Image (cartoon, rainbow, N blue to C red; front, side, top):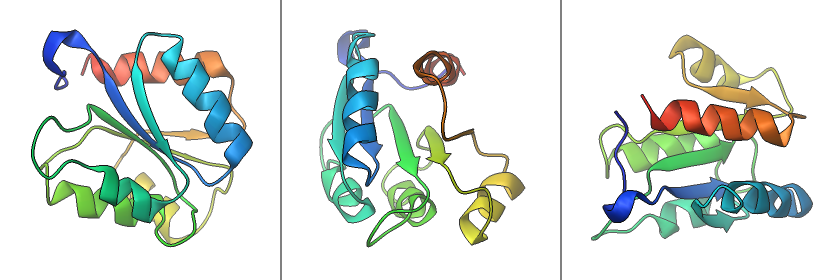
Length: 128
């Protein structure tokens, strides 16, 4: 079963460079009662991960972002927490980062997706 923050609250770190989409996804996730920290790029996602204290329960990472894409962010954060739960999102279905996601069997959603698909996928990941 996935790690949970004290009190059972699910803490999500969301990184996506599309401002409007990031806002929509944040509202969808918060409507489920989940705590969300949303950032516009991979560098800020890495900086947002606490050095001490409670880590996030789930990373939702866009594969293509300025400064750092989703896979490099995931790799950097794995050094801080051995197996962070992750969900990759992207509208692009090719490239080196997609190859890593597919080869390692990592969870992903292809954009565009319905808000209900995101909620279902997060719930599924939080019960693994």
